[in-house]
Length: 250
Length: 250
DNA sequence: CGACGAATTGAACCTATTCAAAGGGTGTGG
DNA sequence: CCACACCCTTTGAATAGGTTCAATTCGTCG
Image (cartoon, rainbow over all chains, first blue to last red; front, side):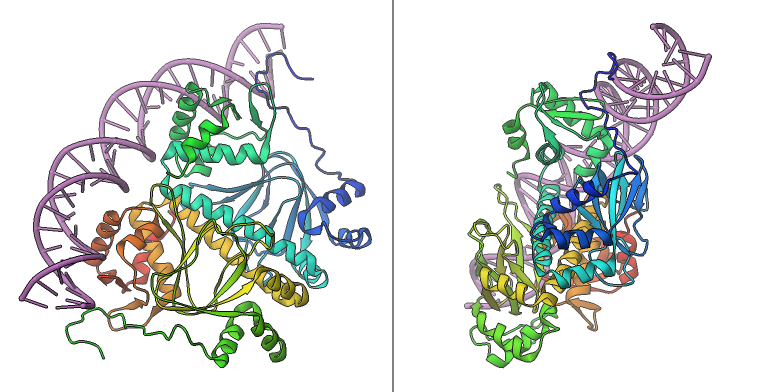
């Protein structure tokens, strides 16, 4: 039951982290884009190769620099992909939700994870060994083909972010980040399209390549202009077109 | 013959653009990382699906926004992958040389190229239709698997650039760009490790997400500090460790 | 030699960062 | 159920770093 005092529109997600039923696992794996064209029998077989892991919010799933031995698939919850820098200025590479993967993609023994993954909410994650996954790729060519498509999409998204970081001022970068989040995590809500991830100003800043103070200023301004509604750890997009105008690589 | 007056250490490349012999094509395709594990017979068959295109320096090979119907492989020369923004501030996504690919990776009909590709030197490029390439992927699983590895590498490089743009000051970003270029295009030379691509300050700036003036200032400083040697359209790295110290994400 | 494009340099301006302090929401423990 | 403590957020003012604009120098090629 939600307390009357609580003003945040974000619902508290109580994910049962440590017990994904076999049914749920099969459903999740079936939703993973690159397993979608498989026969049910094959999927069940693949399912057996995955191990199931539960994490509390804040737990690290893997650390940048560790030997990359597994590929992970998010079953439930939100996972932060991040990169550390020596001065403690971490940057957020991506936010993942159910059906998305991360970890060892390079297929080469001896590699290390380039990013750390942290559970942003309580999360359930499926893990498969590098070599097992390699075998799946060789055995089911359509899986490999759709994986190529997904990686092409991610690469293209990364390139777009590169462009935004290069040419947009802080306000535009924040607008672009909010649009991306709204597309990916937004759900209709009386206040606007609510981004259903608890993100601090710091998180937004590290997605936009700026400081939490600058992010805060940009968000205040946007709120004054009626583009968004925002509070502690939440944002709702009210005027999509207005944000797009700011984020437009002009 | 090189003029005595010419001070640039970059050799003038006279690539025969319009006539790659069949032998050369086979050799190039064999060098493409994702075709490396194929039998000679298969390679010859694949070779037949490629068309050969020649470009002069400055020619556009494909334009962002055009329907993405082909995958391209660089056979000879250098290709600039770039993204335009409305205000004319283009950014350089990547520089490609022999064996690297670009173009339609998404495998979905109706997509458009996200970036433009421009011949940076005279260049010879091999092109294959989207559907033909799709068929190759399905027929030769190892090709798909190694392609996944390559894309994982590119994605990881893009993420690293994202981090650099986020946390490094201009000088550090320029240093990082020079290190990357030196790794990829560098060859030993009396002056230092010479980057064998004609790049203007503008090009370097758009790789580092800054202006040509700032790039120029950073380069002047590095030259004063004995880290590099540079002139019009060329750079040679003298002190790799020094650059690394600047580019270190501290 | 002459002309063009590239690179450098200077100075004013502006944006974003930094540092500091105050304000507000959330959840906890009394 | 209230009050407190903690962390997130906001805001202000000073500063540093980068951009912009403009003028000059330099290198390369015709």
